[in-house]
Length: 131
Image 1: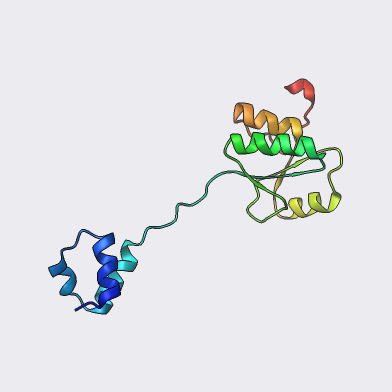
Image 2: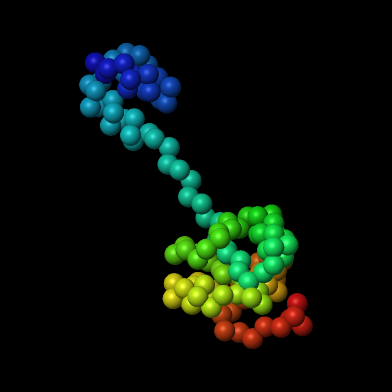
């Protein structure tokens, strides 16, 4: 018979009857518990980091990103999708992003991505006139 703790867990997390639970050994009960554990949903949002912007512009871009389901980071990470840089973007951050294969976008490119869903082609020339 399963001990008290796995019995309580199985009662709350499964449709098993008390008779079915009492017929289990502790090992069987724990195996069942681990097999029915819910898997955390993977966060599939695009990840973005802003650099080289003043406080108010960075806040504006961060809000735009959050409103459009981007996950915003303060630094370059391995899973980062885009580094969006302003006029004062630091060369070290850009270098780190390039080394990790992160796509660098200008502010206008990011806004275009948010508006249209179109991913800018890396290396393609860009100007405000393209908006």
